[in-house]
Image (cartoon, rainbow, N blue to C red; front, top):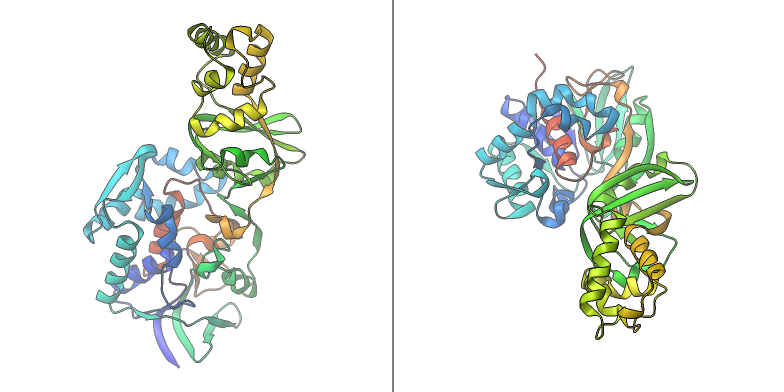
Length: 410
């Protein structure tokens, strides 16, 4: 059996970073990757543009974006945080730009630029990347990994790192293998859900505005009529419901809320009912004598929203604006401020950016990513019970935990 200092299962973002870190410290390293190419999910990141981290400089704010479990990442971020991530990628040829929301993207080349740079470092450090090599079993004995069995060979190592990803985007090879291996080692798996995923609605009318991107809107979630969460930012309508950054961030918490869930879309969150009513009346005055309700709506919402708003309003689209009553104005303003949709579930793992749940953090040493149950087993990336919002936060988990897991313990 071929022996390595470090054997990594999974050649995604976390696995590649772990390999680079370990090999840079003189370790003989191998990656066992089930696909015939590494980093397939990374290539999809940011729709191919690869939002690989976030420029938020306040670490407390950065950590807070991961919720209650974020404190687990303090140690990893102190060793390889978002600033060091930017510096590192710049040093290996990935120049970057900062965009809205402090999102960091490669200046050119997108995801492929990032992946090529990582692979280049692996080659430079003589990492053995075994593509098309799915791990069939890990042999454990008394809290210790003895060997890894693939389809054709068996391998041993001083240290094993599970970096198999979650269950999101299964077409890229993320089919949950790491959870099975972790359970075999005695680890607890926190229940799994698709996260950062579009939301299905009971209503079919969202398809009337499919592809319409909305900015600076507010989306509120009601559980049995109680306001449980809200977000301000960007969203879009789809053929099956809603998507976009604020929808996908809220989707990660939907399993936590009991009861009937409703979404409320405020198209004009910066305007009070009174100010918006006054604006609508000004538009009516400006179009009086020659305008129709359809034209009034067109002046207040994006063009792709026109058909949908006319469908949802009780006012005939050809009604002359001067005949629109105060009661109809009030109802239309209420519609602009509160478009209601009933949640009918989440899209599945095939459309989820990340997986919520995973290997229980209480069973992992946050300073090394080593298992507390198995002395030579480590974890990195999405297989852990960690996930954050969109904006570079989830890839940062991969870089940081991969770096720490790959480090030679002092």
